[in-house]
Length: 186
Image (spheres, rainbow, N blue to C red):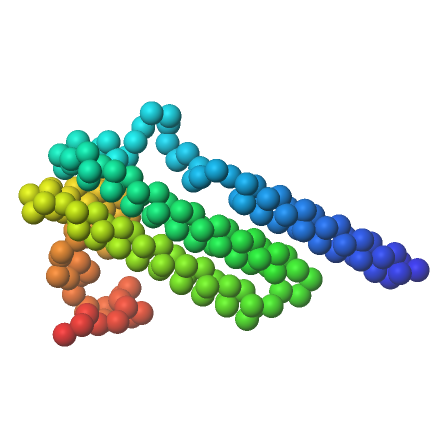
């Protein structure tokens, strides 16, 4: 009798979770389709274009081009982040399933990795397009700004290596603590 109750309880729990999932996905989908533009990412009145316009000395035409470029970049990034969010939810659903499928989880994480790579490439393309409508002097200023931004945002690496260091890791000596690290490239 208890097996029958457990089976019935499990069936109701699964049905409830499926219905909740459908409702939540429908809500996310509804709000995603009905928004009028990218969500605000900063305080009202703050415009990242203002920073670049001021630092690079952009003309009015360049500022308009930057705004268009930024809006396109944000829309593309938002769509990729939405896909990543959905895949993360699928991983969580599978992770807490009765018998999780590790192959599916691995496939989903690979997909998330590819989407993150696309985000990175999109950022690189965005900077290249911005560079395309800058004068040579503005390009040099942009280069310094971007390097500064990336250096401030980077995560500390081995021994807090600086970008451009040829060998940020200590030499491979095969000693204790190094047995799992491959030798440096020659």
